Image: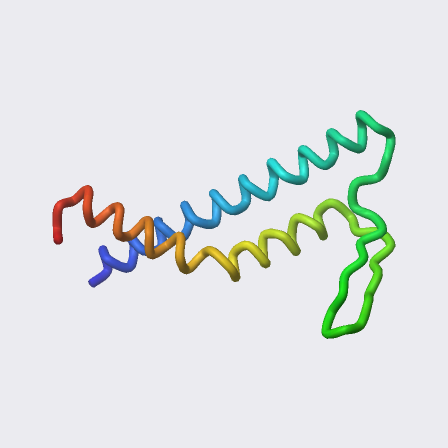
Length: 95
């Protein structure tokens, strides 16, 4: 049914927009810290990956946003879509 597919796509757009807004708020808060205290926000990342330490010296803001959006989508998008679908169905009183 075409309508069902359109509804799912619309919900996916809402999920993506919500995730992008969360990431935007976070990166804006980081930029504000940098402006206030005079430091660069997205440099000197250190992390441990499979018992091997890695370091990234500097990332551009759009790279950080892309990484965060991709990561959050992988972790939460499916669950968010399911929850939003359940809420819509409940509102429509279909179940």
